Length: 368
Image (cartoon, rainbow, N blue to C red; front, side):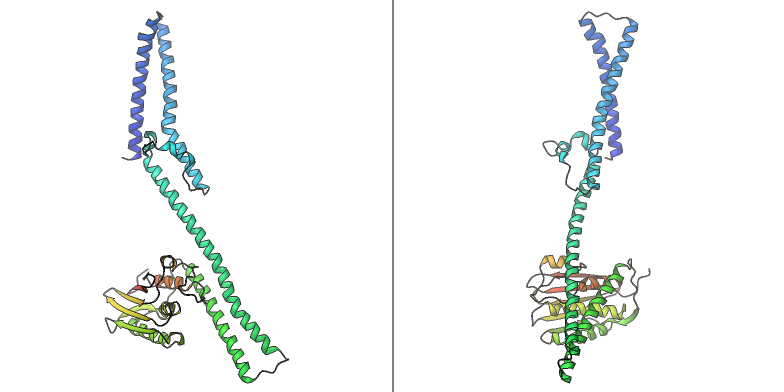
């Protein structure tokens, strides 16, 4: 039953009871109490007395109506005020709302839906506040981590530069070359970190529309080349990478640069966060309007808290004892780039049972 209908019925019932109560009061006083005490009144006096009884009854009725209908509204307003000031626990006087059996009292039952929605809102706001604090803490930790990540290669660059500029030593050509190579490697590392930050800023301010340079390409051949490039990486020399597809050619519209980034990030994560040797499988299947890419490994897997936060922007989860050189943005970038392609990405993983990523992409570009 809706609040409006319920309110009307309660109000009508209250008015009927008030009129009956007023009529009975007049009859009892005039016909019962006054004759009992041998009080004789005239016609004019009787009219005045009836008026006083009616007025007193009306005042009592107003008070009862205010208590019955206004009390719950006041409670609701206090609860809303409490929520607006960031207090998400139930009001201290919540006990008076329910009876001993835990059910709403009659006058509060009138606003049952409102109270239920307020309870749901309070729980949602409390959950959002907890999530906000977790994200804020992760953000602070991420800022500290990224500062360290940038400072570490910078220390190498300044250190080797100081060695080369030190006139007290004469470095051989091989030594100078090794110093310059280290400076170049650390500079490239810093450039990668800055590119990640720049890309995240672009994705965050894209408002759901990220500029992609899409073209119709063979996803099978493209993915095969990416897997081959990763397998030739020195870090992957003790890992076995496999590739399988149902169709020899699958044409899909995608951005070559960013899709390569997506696949490389996932494959390299399987290598960097799993002890060697393991098998990494990449499979592509065709489903008429969509294509699915699955990247699976039989590695150490991930606990549920890492899986739940894997695509969070500032989360730096790892399943190994090796410190991560990443920014904590890699999988967040993957997630947003897949979404920019109008696709979806999901992950399944359990400790000691490996990890599986599933990317689903539409074959044709969606009209915006």
